[in-house]
Amino acid sequence: MERKRFLKSLLVGAIAAPAVFEACKKTGSTLTDDPSGTGTVINTGSVSNSCTIAPTETEGPFPTKAPSSYVRSDITDGRSGYKMTAKLTINSNCNPLTGAIVDIWHCDAEGNYSEYGGSGMQSANYQSVHFLRGRQITDSNGIVNFTTIFPGWYAGRATHIHVHVYSASGNSLKITQIAFPEGSGSAVSLVNGYKKGMSGYTYNANDNVFSDDMLKIEVAQVTGNLTEGFELEIKINIA
Image 1: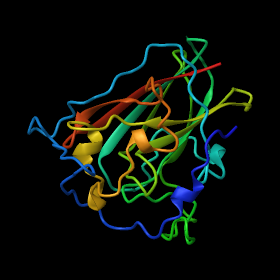
Image 2: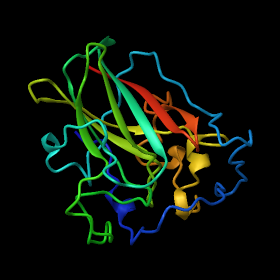
Image 3: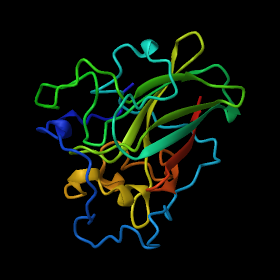
């Protein structure tokens, strides 16, 4: 089901450091992190109301190894970072899909994934832990909610969340990814890449997965602030 390959861009060394927040500059231009001076998201993005089918994206290289073992709404699992809640609405032909199985997973504040590591793709070894992975079942409105932290980033990729949707009987319906609004006043700029900053960050426009998303179907709405945390919302339409 993959339509893009980005493994080459992920062959990076260690990305491990405690969470410290630094100034953020986009390569080649100056980026004002917090134009309001309040630590609050101004560039929120929007929740698409179209019925356009979500693009199918790659599942790997860090998919959850045993997703049925992690039926939980709070997937934080002790990882530090800015709190974020994620509300995903799954629609089929523009109607809420009830009883669908939804898995999500993403990297931590330092850009590392649980269940992997100790190799050239991720030197930090987290093979024995399972943070920032979880599964929920959609309600009558097609909605699932997760409590997590704002994802960090790693070389070659923009900030993102992986999503795999299954039917109630376990058949795969959609593998896709969630992108974040970027630029001045966005949550991405406020978080500033945690300790790493934004030097070397790959923006959506240059990301191997999101660069062809001209309608921004994969870009979520993200609101909130540094003090209380962030709220992400997106509608994912499947055939």
